[in-house]
Length: 147
Image (cartoon, rainbow, N blue to C red; front, side):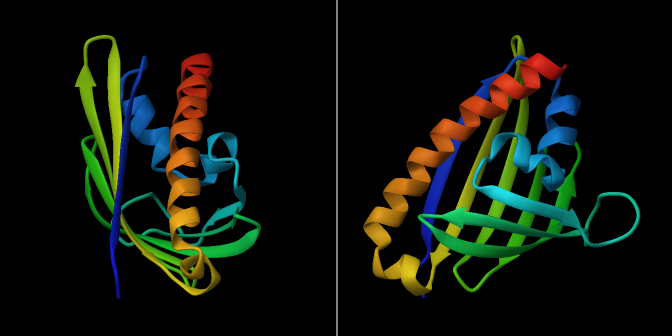
């Protein structure tokens, strides 16, 4: 098993609580992470440790089904998730930090690329890095226009 790290951050001109609440609810991913075609919270009740989401996305024309589970949470500073997927398994850390004018939102991903996506791993990694830059910019636009 080879783990590949991916990291990225962006400054969003919104309060930390607004960014945290929007980003940690994977049902909002369709608004900014455009490869996501479906997202649903599976567990009843409030968002917290143990909350699970199912999510469908398309990565390089490959349908990916994710099952995300919240492992740890320190509201509004960070959330750790684990995704169990047969194509892209990963541990994900979302970080939120108050800065002048808003919030720095970052993510650190420890990614295990599997199956067909692993056969084309250099292309897959190039694609994922390009997508995160593009969609973090879209997240900034969405949040700054909604809040």
